Image 1: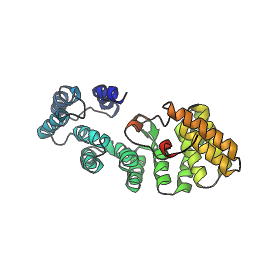
Image 2: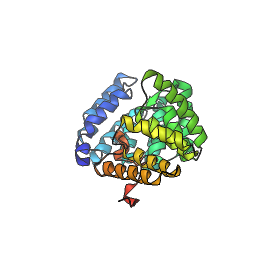
Image 3: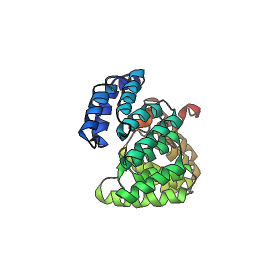
Image 4: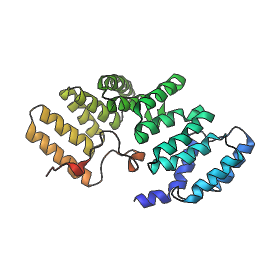
Amino acid sequence: MRFLLLLLLPMAAIAQYREFGGTPATARQDSIMTVHLKGGAWKYSYLTPEWTQHIDAGLRADSTIAYLWQQKAMPLFKMRKHDLAMEYLDKAVQYDAHWLDYRAFMKCIFAKQYRSALQDFAAARAAKGNASVMDHTYDLWSAVCHLQLNESDSALRLLQAQIKEHDAKGWTHHLDLYYLGIAYYETGRYPEALAAFDRAIAKYSQFSDAYFYKGKCLGQLGRNEEGLRVIRQGKVFYEKGYSINEDNSIYETYPYQVAWRWKSVK
């Protein structure tokens, strides 16, 4: 399955080009990107030297094209060469602030630079409001950063406000509810955490990670046998391949994604 995803990467890159505003500033830059991305790098897997060679050729022609810097950085993040990748992504942001929220996301999920990610999200929010990057709002990702910094109260405030707003519009996502449950769990509010995990499971019935933390909540409430049954149910779903199902979860473990291989639940 992962091999198939690598083969499909050029198609994903083209979609990304459109999503992130690949329209360059000048006709010359448009030509450079057409030659070196569509006619070059995107014909190969990002694991090949040809990918980087074509992008480097484009940057030699014009080193101010932000999207070329992002495309140079992206494979390195997926190969977990985060320090090097961030140097190139910083160049993308230098030439086009449009990439600021993407850099914030990469700091949050890939590079684990949570304080720096919060700074980028705050700057992006000041410019765009609580917009979205990688399918979720700045406030969700900011809440994840706060959780990773043991700032659970700050995470809880962001998630409560967002879910109240999204509930009114019918937009609430199971990942929002999962991290809300985590924030309640981290602050010792187990009944509220249990309710959040139940809502997450109602939206994604095989959500193994939510079952695990639901079971932990039940244990904290003195319902140990029930909690163990729920955790075992979650492990069954995990063994069938169900977990956090974000696009980038094939490359990086998300915060509070359960490492079931270390759990002796039978």
